[in-house]
Image 1 (cartoon, helix red, strand yellow):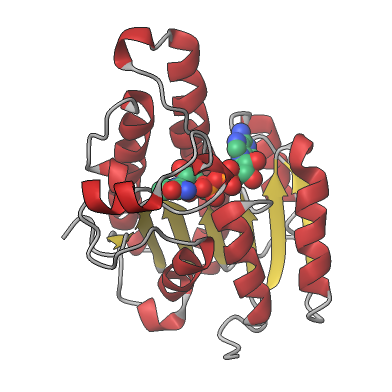
Image 2 (image 1 turned 60 degrees about the vertical axis):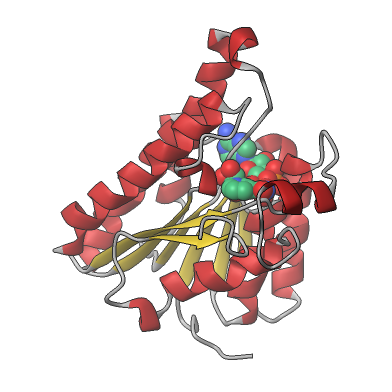
Length: 248
Ligand SMILES: NC(=O)c1ccc[n+]([C@@H]2O[C@H](COP(=O)([O-])OP(=O)(O)OC[C@H]3O[C@@H](n4cnc5c(N)ncnc54)[C@H](O)[C@@H]3O)[C@@H](O)[C@H]2O)c1
């Protein structure tokens, strides 16, 4: 496999499971030192990802961090030893709740995790990248950044916010040699989407997915790594859909 990230340090926030795990493993395969961060409750899963990366003869460590807490986010970045080439901000939550049943607790949980978490991580990492005069930030947005899928009002609002944050950071940080982009996955098979269980054929038909299937975490890892690679040096502020053509 190509070693596009040799001698680079990557931080994957929300890297213990699903899409983040696939991204972390792929970064390890391509030569990066990979720091995996996730909530304390996922430390076992996170450590498993790190062990797999170390088995590839790459360095990897796990850091406990709840992205809703600025002190934990700041401590996570302090633990990086002053160098970060790639930030992959993946952490996120989603739960189907009809709007008429949506309470403040659900709204705050979703927005605090998905949007405030992205802000806090970006804010903590940016000064390091500005000092380096280079860096790549990739945030996981969603097709729901644009599509108003039912029963996901808080989630859709949070992901629209992530897309707006990315565009703004692209403008503000681009002058410092930093690119900021987003990946917008469609439906990807992870534990986030396993309840209620997905009926693949129905989903494909309902959302008219030209590729005729839903996605796997590995489908997202390649495009995310492209945005973090030198090939994407002049790609800044985009939302790259990875959805089998759903948004076409
Ligand atoms: N699966 C999909 O269909 C899909 C589609 C579009 C976007 N996304 C986005 O992709 C990202 C990854 O989701 P996934 O499908 O891999 O789900 P997942 O549940 O498998 O992974 C999400 C990870 O984020 C972590 N996380 C949750 N809250 C956190 C917090 N407060 N602090 C730190 N980490 C936290 C979880 O512990 C988990 O490891 C999310 O941002 C999600 O919104 C997923």
